Structure formats: C-alpha cells, structure tokens
Amino acid sequence: MDRSETVMSAGEPVPVGWSDEREQVEATGPGNRCVATVLVPAHDEATVIGRCLRVLLTDARPGELAVVVVSNGSTDDTAVLARRTGRELGMTVDVVELAQPGKVAALRAGLAAVTCWPVIVLDADCELPTPTARALAAALERAAPGGGAGRVPGAAASSAPLVQCFYRAWTALPYVRENLVGSGVFALNRAAYDRLGALPDVTNDDGWVRRSFAPDERVLVDEPFIVHAARTTRALVARRARIINGNRQLAAQLGADPGRNRAGGLASCVRGGAIRPPDAAAFVVIAAASRWVAAVRRLRRDERWATDTTSRAVS
Figure 1 (cartoon, helix red, strand yellow):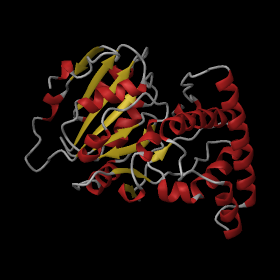
Figure 2 (tube, rainbow, N blue to C red):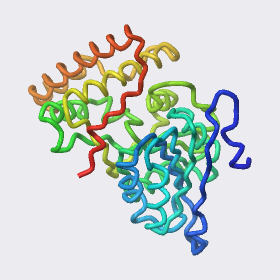
Figure 3 (tube, rainbow, N blue to C red):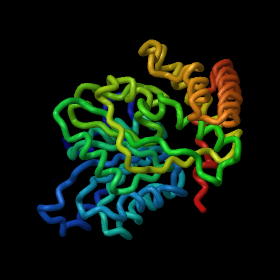
C-alpha cells in the first residue's frame, strides 16, 4: 500500500504529509536488519519528543529500529523537532502529520504502514532505552499472537510525596507486577495485529490491547523504561479519573475485567508487607478522589483528553 493512501479511509483525519528521512541510513549493512517498528503518537509534544527519540535511538544501530512519529493536530514544533532529532542522531525518523488531533486515528495511520514487526507503541512522554526495545522485539519473535510491555516503574523523586506513596502501592499490586501490558508502552507482533484488526474508538488504548490477550499471551520484559508520573496530587487525580472513565468505556464494550485490582488485593499486600500502611492509605485516598472526579466528568459529559503537563516538564 502506498503511504499516501494509508489513512484515507472514511471518518479518519486526512494526513498533512509524510516525511521520510531514509536517505540518512544508506550505510545500513545487511547485518543491521530491522528488529521492530516504534510508533510514537504525538500531539503537541515538542517539549518531550526529542528526549523520547534520543533515549530510544542513542544506542541503536542504523536501521535497527524503524521509528514513526505520528504528529496529530499539533500546533507546536513536534514534527519539526522529531525530524531534527533524527538528523542529529544520524538515524531514520519518519514523520506523519495528521491535520486533526486524536490518538486512535494516529495509531491507525501508523499501524497501517508498519512493515517491520513487531511494533512497539510508545507514548512521547515516556523513555524507552534501546536495550528494552530490543528485549521486547526478541520476546515477541514467535508465530503465536502476543502483546508485550516492560514492567511499570514507580514515581520519581520530583513527584509530590503523596504521588510517590500512591505509585509505591500501585506498582506493588499483583495486577500491575504480573498482568499489566500498557501504561505508556505496549508491543504487538504481526499475528497479534492480524487477529485484533482495527483499533476501535476507545479512550484507553492500552487497556483495550491488554484485555485482548489472555494472560499466557502477554509478555513482560524486565528491562527498564521510564514513565514520567504526575508531579502533583491534583494532576495524578485527573490522570486516574481519565483512566477510570476509559476503563468504564471498555467494560461497556467488553464486559467486566476479571484482572482488575480488588480491594482485597491491597489489603493482602499490606498484611504481607509488600505495601506499607502509609502508602496504602495514600492509594485509597487518591483512588477515592479519582472516582469522584471521574463521576463529575461523566455527569458533565466531559470527554476531553486533558493531557498532564506536569509529567512533561523537562529539567
């Protein structure tokens, strides 16, 4: 399929353009085969797109990773900086520009053009080092459908104390340690993509992908990646409220999620010493506040994406 035709189906934004910096990697040797495509949907991510690409590509061999940034409805220099970063690193960074904002449309446009599998979907505000991308690619080199991710890290010291408490509790829950595929990074092999088909109109794309696979089809690699947590309690509550409503949308479409966290799981972790009582208390308070904010948004029919700007501050 010609790239200019990949996103022209009814109901999707028309692409402004696609740039291909492939001439920069003519030196790619036969030993430097592509091991994965990394797809980065980005809306007004000029503050973080350079960091995202540098961490991803600094240790990569030319041609090892096919990187596609889909700038959707950006009003800043996201596309310009993505191209510039690729040139500075001497690496290929393909840039798709869509006229309208929308993560689902961005993912559809990018996924339709993938030729190197598996594909890793990476949020622009996350940091995925080259070795972690390689580990994900290797883990999904199999014929059976599979979805993968890295294990979710906790909050950095730059976050508010209550936010750090929440993440210490959350990342210790069995659901997150053993079951979570997503939270800023997920990967699919070709068999998985062929089985899933087109991404539906959902708020929580990570959750939809995770729920599309049985536990034995999910792969978690131990290599690190960084998810920049909200820096303030207010920003965390807003983020969690969005996730809650996204999960409600998924439940309406797919039924109840049997793998979700349960109150008993938190209590068991506290009794077993995996979670400290102060962290558990912070988790309960923030979870309750998030449910309240989520309910208010539903009453107001507020479906805005509400990007967390605090996690995108680059020091």
